[in-house]
Amino acid sequence: MSDTTTNSPSRSERYEELLDAAAECFQSRGFDATSIDTVARHLGATKGRVYHYFPSKMDLFNAVRDRGMDIVFQATDPGYQADLPVLDRLEAMARGHVRAMLFHHSFMLVLKDGLLMRRYTTTTEFQKESLSQHIARRDAYEARFRELLAKGLAEGSLRAGPDPAITVQTFMSALNGPVAWFRPRPGDTPQKYEAIAEEIVRFAMQGLRAHPS
Image 1 (cartoon, one colour):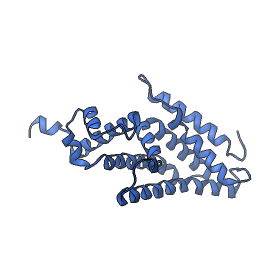
Image 2 (cartoon, helix red, strand yellow):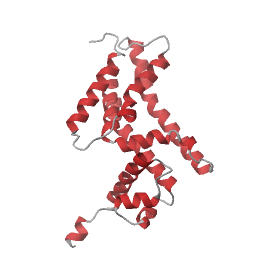
Image 3 (tube, one colour):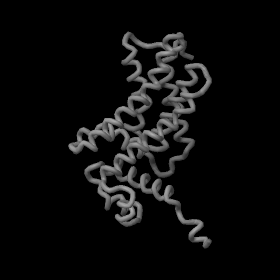
Image 4 (cartoon, rainbow, N blue to C red):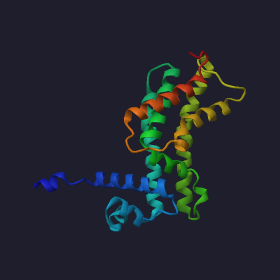
């Protein structure tokens, strides 16, 4: 086997490269201004390569959006599954979530837009079904946080205001904050992202602890 064959990207690697390029295009240009041709040019590939994997722009957008959900589930699953006190599990999940917001910012912006797809053309049954599945998956993800918050409130390690639902939404808003205000810059380092994540998690958890440190 030649070196060229050995070192050529695998199908899965090419697929991931395509998703990365599409995420960058969708987050910088928006859904309407992004086309298959836009993604192909950004990737330095032909439109045929994109169409080989995705028959339409909507299919590509859905794949990027779904990968965003994959990322946050994978980032928070270790904390959710950990055999630790509820407070530690919730903090680990919060840290994983915020790190995903920072390290995978393009995907997270598309994920946010994916939850607002009613603003786009969702007239076909396929599009409506895809959006419904995405919202159900989002709800299942947030349910993990609500579950731990409820356990923490019940055992007294966490506190909430008169309406726990407002507490949950405020907590999640803090964790999702980087999607709104963070913009990666040339020269950013992983250490910078980690420091930002720690500050956000510290702030969010401080408001929930029954006995703030």
